[in-house]
Image (tube, rainbow over all chains, first blue to last red; front, side, top):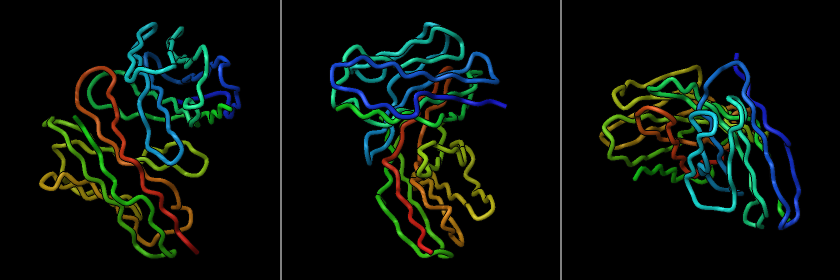
Length: 114
Length: 116
């Protein structure tokens, strides 16, 4: 069976500090990977998605970047955090075989920028 | 552009009551997919159901049922005989058909509270 991990679970960072959130998937190969952000009391916004190693698509211009150094690893980064980067970050995967795909989500990382 | 509207921000009912969560969507695609996810207090989104645009049959899974009506662009979710464990935020989502990664467009969510 497939599992998805995210770490850290919770993070408190000062404004201007760097960020690295990691997401890994087990039990599947060549998945599509996604990063979403959920601001407090709001819905989910797609930030980045990837269909393969080194292939990143950005959905909204922002202070964040993403990378996929390995097939089942997806990293969300920032060089300098802003207060507005606070939120709940969710990683998701889908099978990546074309056709209809269901996205399955990880446990999420709660980020608070002070 | 695709859009999902969940007009009910919060719903509170007493245990064992039936409750319906509304979802209205907008899309220009003729082929698309609709989803419902549950977000319990732990935060992880749990997949509940996927429905494609060509299948308007209603679906029932235990106490959960879904009513898909293309004529009104709605995909409503009903919980029968609600339980405290059903308390969560529920999201309706829409994705286009196609190859490669499929982007989900989420509604704002409905916070459901089941009181004992």
